[in-house]
Length: 443
Ligand SMILES: Cc1ncc(COP(=O)(O)O)c(C=O)c1O
Image 1 (spheres, rainbow, N blue to C red):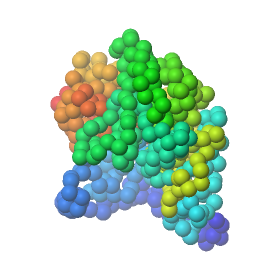
Image 2 (image 1 turned 180 degrees about the vertical axis):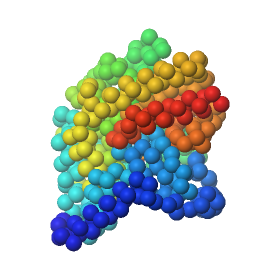
Image 3 (image 1 turned 60 degrees about the vertical axis):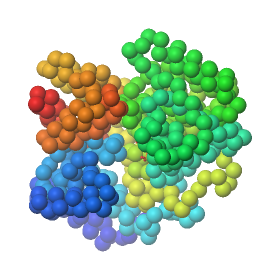
Image 4 (image 1 turned 45 degrees about the vertical axis):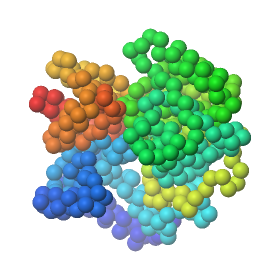
């Protein structure tokens, strides 16, 4: 929407003021004691303290964020992989302000503005070959719920799902049933069959065969009741565990023979593997029939082949996204695709190489202290010591106190996950992060 010259002048003033604040002209909104009071109050409201004593001030500058008490930190947690362009990106802020000035805060599936179609079009323009329809939603789990319904409807109401061991697919009732974490569904009934097969294990030369044998066995015993095979092409919450293309292909071929829909849950991998879609990174477009995405998108979407189109009424909902989130999500995809992030020579792969080199040096400086480096692109992980959950959490807490926010993945063994803010990360900031990682290993 064009709001005229005054709007443009005002917007320029606002953006200049933000840039000035980012350059050091802003004071923290709270004292350390006031910030602690806010966090204590929050813990009372939600009945559980925050994982970290983190309260953002609203000011950030690329990979660094200023907390409400004025401390600056490096952020490699990124809201669990959401903020690809880090904090305070002026291009995204400008996009957000323009969208925020429009008449609707939220858009829905009945009444929408132009951002709704524009986002879908941009997504499908860049989607893997053969994927030509899209449905927007809010969280990654929402998109997965829509995918589940679509798959079941297409397969005549078959209820069952095949998934990988250690998978994570979200927190709604159905997704908690598929997710391989019994502690996340304690006290919940099981309402449909979920069959889990082992994921790739690079330490086991027979791993691919074991997974294929397990899949064949499940299909032989229960094939008629299974609608879809849900797959994280890089396991996210399990700790950025990768597998080669050759691992997936025979599994997907088996599913196709049985009319079991192959569904890539790319909520966490979206924009992080060195390509926009992990499906394309692994050249699996011929096999994957539905893709769900979220996080970096600032909302979520189900992308699918037209042949799977649901009956009207199967998927909808009041909200398709906040106007700001839809506009910013679309701008993020444009920036990702236009600013040389992807491909073998792209920024993500360069950062991966630099990060791997840092990890190798860290390992040399602290023999035996780190191992099991895995992941790809802007999602890399490593194990600290023997990887007990307690020690890993203690380590990332030390890093937080020293000025680096990180998150862990997996569960005994656990690992440290580095969500790289690849949209803004400089080599100096990467080095600063590794200085902290090293100092906290020494402690
Ligand atoms: C692979 C995967 N699927 C689904 C989800 C759920 O997304 P959300 O938390 O946005 O509902 C996640 C979240 O971490 C995820 O990693």
